[in-house]
Structure formats: C-alpha cells, structure tokens
Image (cartoon, rainbow, N blue to C red):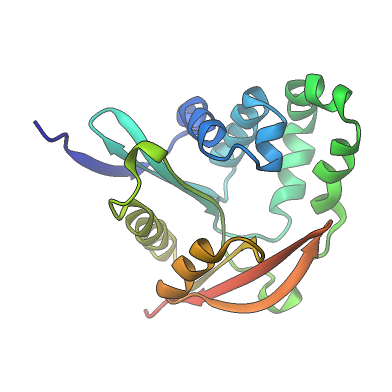
Length: 201
C-alpha cells in the first residue's frame, strides 16, 4: 500500500523531528557539528519566532522533508541569538569545548551586515529531503509550498544562499526553479552564492 503524502505548517513542537532529519541528512554541515540538541533548540527558536516559517512534507506519519525560513531576514539571526543564545550555547557546549573555534563561527552572522539592496526580503534558511525519499520531486514540492506560505503572508520575494563550490546539483536546482544568482560572497573560507526570486503576483 502506498502511503499518502501531505504538506503542513510546522509548529514549535515539530522541532525535535526536524532536528533529527537535519542531523541525519546534513552530515558535513556546520550546524550539524554542534549536535542534535543544538539543532532542536535552534529550530524551536526559528519556528517560535514571529517571523519564522516552516513547512513539512509527510509520507504517512514520517517527516520526509522540510523547508524553513523567515518572513523578514532583517535582524532575524540576531533576534534568535539574543532570545535563545544561552540555551543554544548550553546545548552545543560539549562540541564547543572540543573545538572552541566553533564559537567564533557560530557568532559570525551576529555582526555580519545585511545586504542593503534586499534588507527586508524573506529568506529560506534550510531545505531538506530525507535520503529515504530522494528522486521523488519532494524538494521542488517543498520549495513551492514554502513560496506559497510566503505569498500568503504578503511577501513579494525570497532570498537564499548555498555553497558555490562542489554543489552543482543544488545550484542547478535553484536555477531550474527560477532563482537568480545575484552575487557571491565568502562566509569564512566558504564561497557562497546568493539567490533571489521575485514572485509573479
């Protein structure tokens, strides 16, 4: 029997499930290196924030993927840190003790400036599909549902960033979905591409 799929808005109490999927799917990502406990606190903070927004795609009762971001990127990360910084640090403490340099990397966005040309634009922070459900078009479906949620919240556009190097599939995915690479920048030593899409509404 084929399980049914559904997409719904994510709530704060979904954070543990989201964190687990992130942890198992993004093995080499920086946030993953801070531990599953940190990820749970981070996603709780995002989903409970007034500008936080997330959608989850379920196959039966199994979370197969998610797309999470913000309706307004201005000051969003700083707001998360100011409101939840202590809880985040405590959750990540075992990993930070082993590698104190991660503290600096964690705080870089706190003093990084916003792109003034897109100051109030919404942002897609994370999109993930479980390896168990690859090649089913779920990534495209999640991206579309996230955009619909933004439009329903009177948003006109969206930003996202992803690695520039050794990431051709992901960059092509966004290009196919009508995102335009508007600039490249460095986040630490990583070269990133910044993508932008204006909605046809």
